[in-house]
Length: 132
Ligand code: ATP
Image (cartoon, rainbow, N blue to C red):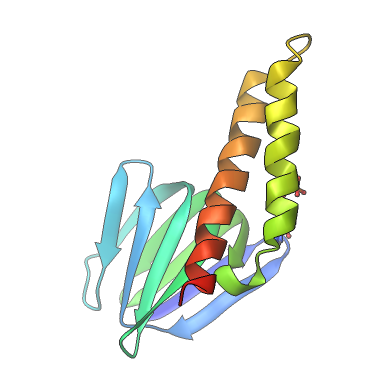
């Protein structure tokens, strides 16, 4: 099956893969060739695809996924393959988000929370690449 991941910053991935596991807003789901067509929204999370017996990891910053006849299209607000994540940048983003929580005046809670979720998930996905 073909997996494509597209963001406003460009195409992140277009590959022939064996299986995909992603984090939908309704829960984690797996897609194998021959899966019925469906559409779902995605959380900030980790997408895993399998190819030739290996696992590959991609950070997904929300969006949606559409599966139609062995094609899975992911449209995300931003996304990076594990090896493309700048882990120091993610750690800095995490610190900034944590600092915002400490300063209670004009705290935009949801914005700080999602920035923190992105940073934590990027660090987790990047660590998958370095542990391979
Ligand atoms: P930051 O505060 O560090 O900019 P962010 O979560 O606000 O992080 P996004 O809005 O999700 O960033 O993404 C903006 C662009 O920067 C996208 O192209 C995204 O892929 C890229 N990007 C963000 N953080 C990282 C990172 N840690 N490593 C590599 N690319 C990143």
